Length: 353
Ligand SMILES: [Fe+2]
Image (cartoon, rainbow, N blue to C red; front, top):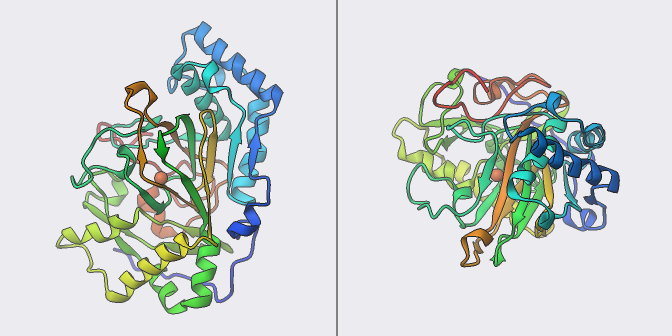
């Protein structure tokens, strides 16, 4: 691996993305689609049906949704320069079929940026639901099960989720400001923060990397990096760090690295640093991965298959994205601001998105 240097801030990083739970619970982060945008989304459902279009196989040129595009510009600004996340309610879940909602969500995604593959099969729209898979298998990922998902972020600029069905019980979402978590560790355990600014090995869980990354079954990235005055985070599902140790050629996690990972997890779990909420059917959650961690609790489904908890998922590359540390180039394809980056390289055609 190339040698990289990492700048570590000596003082807390201050910007609107640095928030704690007591402040954010008083702020209007949970917003609603305006009536005119809801009308336009209804037209999108009708237009796509009339033209025989189905996501993800259509583009901007095929539909007319200027208000959605305009509305999403302010959301993009909030994601990069504000708190880093929004939840948008108001869509009438019961008024649409699943395929209509996929088209509506796809149009929202088109207004925000470009979709990148969420899995090695090249899928551009993901389905977060319990597939009954066994997490003990090394290629199964937590989102394919009903098990708890620890605080983490995803391999793309912006994560989008649309709730189709919620669980019978559990499945509570939570988000934490990666900046506030970083600042807390800086203030309380700066020795451990240094460990989180160095590359840590991560189990790839069988997912294909982009060609520049090579085909090792593990990769290494720091949790925190600081470039151009901006703090960015990349925190993989906690267990994937430890599972990298099954590969003989992966660097061994030192005691202090393990202590740093445990400390990071505990700060995220501290109720001062995260807010809990339940995504309701029709809700859309949008998150800037570089400054917000997300998690989900274990859940139980209704017995009927068509009532199972089900979220649609988009991974988006956006035009107002920040510069990343150069170490991210191989995993993300590019560290340049605004570049097409992130996602998982499809196995069949690893050079295109
Ligand atoms: Fe995730």
